[in-house]
Length: 347
Image (cartoon, rainbow, N blue to C red):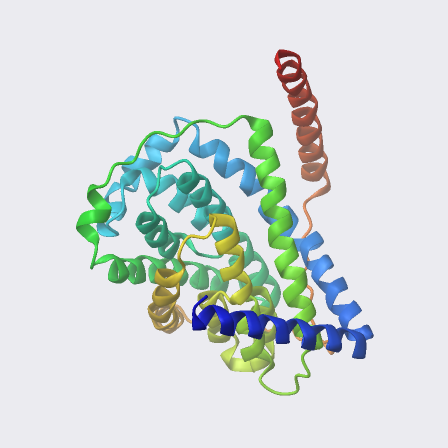
């Protein structure tokens, strides 16, 4: 065991002891933190992430992904990535970094992506989805949908150029490697993987919400929230008055420790060094793009502020959509039961 491993084991032990002590010393704050984390998962994460975990895998297994590959061919060449990765790239830009990380993990496990390709692809597709950036941050927190659109496109531009700069050193090896065809998974396997991925993300969010509730924060709340978890940083950015759009941009760009741990878990341990390095480039590029958007397309924002400093971002599916989605899941589970029964009889 080397020195760094010893230091990490000692540090994790002290971290566990101090967190447990704070949990017993401040039980009310701990309970509120867990409750807010569960509410965040119920209102925002599960409706936004769970369908995309399923839909992204179904789309990547369909022939329609060939159309996306040809449309994204110039972009993939610019990023030094195989064109077959364009489907995963699109799923990250539409469904968020968690959906793309799960797809990258499946591709690495099936030997369709090398570790170097997966690390570079993470830099390009680790973005927040438009439902969160435009709907939640723009419309709800900043009370301006245009700023949400500016934030969304600023992060995509930053993802592209930061990935291009990171990938310049190994462009030949990354672009010329083979990309074997995928082995399609059954719907029951996709559904089980989506449930597991959703629970993983929710577990991290609840834990980091607990940590944030236990910290005795009077000042630097936004900075700490930004480093811990992206949605927490965006929620705290509204209290920075005129700097709120740029504080939200920084929160989205930094991602936070929670997002990095989620990505590491969903990808199966792909190296995050390239992603961390790309974020150092991503932050100034995103803030610069946002500044140009606001300069050439001025738009006022009315920041949503409440006396409660802990904001739980509300998001609910429409009733008709929720009912149809429930029927779809029930039918899928019911149909997969017969396939499982046949496999048991064959065994």
